[in-house]
View 1 (cartoon, rainbow, N blue to C red):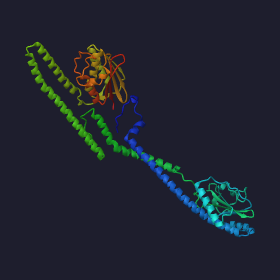
View 2 (view 1 turned 45 degrees about the vertical axis):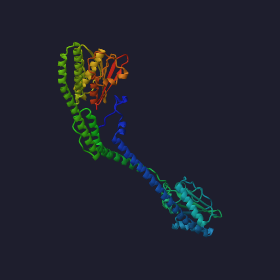
View 3 (view 1 turned 180 degrees about the vertical axis):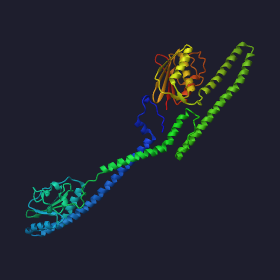
View 4 (view 1 turned 180 degrees about the horizontal axis):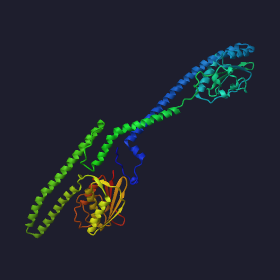
Length: 496
């Protein structure tokens, strides 16, 4: 695919930054939109999904805490109804038979529980659990509720860990696993210096685990999705934009070769319509140029006869002064007609584009000037061949060198090559051009009689023809006065 590069002084010798080209290209922007769309969709959907999961967890935590409170309150009421001397006997029998969902003990002291970090879900469980217990056991009862990790949980007293007990003493085998979820511990004051100790796992083991907005597995999935999207998206977008690239290339080449083959009308409906309009525009330009050439040919043919008749009649005038004045006017008219035809021929764009050895072209012009006794200095870099119209380009540079020699007695030509542009500077040490008239010298028949030389002998078309040829190559031509006197003409011809 092709995009004509933009020139700036900063990138004359260095190509445009790859990242900048990607960001400016249609493919890069489409892929950026697709990636941003996927990322935004994933983030928003994941945010909504996690929030919904958190809401569901909160509801489950509240119900689970109420159910657990009901079971614990039944156990507490059972033990409160027993005489104190029978409570330990019943506990021992329950351990042997496995008849309770909790680890239950009667302790002579309040056991200090190392609580886990606070969280919203933990608060919901504790609040609903305590509320359920007080609703069933009474508000005056002293109840202490904590969550503990299995490896730091103390039982019976503040020196004995749960992990130190034999497995048969616990009905929850997972309670011994250090990786198990936190254990809910409730201690109820039974009076007479006894505390009923109940420890239980929550029915849903991952209830207190905080939801991750972008867990590792989801990030890996998202990365894989983006890679697949970029790969197939790039292929699809390039396939869709390839006709646009051909259209851009055709528009660039149209300025160089008006007779290039028409653009293929293919691709999406809108692109085909654009290509069709482009081809119609090319046909109209071709007809306009052909009509202009026929017009100039007709003018040349039609004016020769009346000019010849007028010249014959001028010879018959009796007064010599009138005859000479009339003859000079006819010569001026004839030069103007010849200049107009020369301008038409000089801007002819039907010549085929082919590779040109610029240094060889300049050396041939240097040899021609030296034969006539003029001096032309050539310097600069010898780069790759330049693709252009050799006859037109030679005519352009020849006009500029002739001007430099005429007004400055010698010409200095410097060539600078870069991957983007061919830069040719032609300098002289003549009188230069007033800054206020630099733009006017490109107008047809405009001559700087006062500022340069009264005996130019030209028609004032040379610079205009040269600039038209440069424009036909897609380039730019500029003039500036040199420090110390003289004129510098700069041709910037793109290599694309």
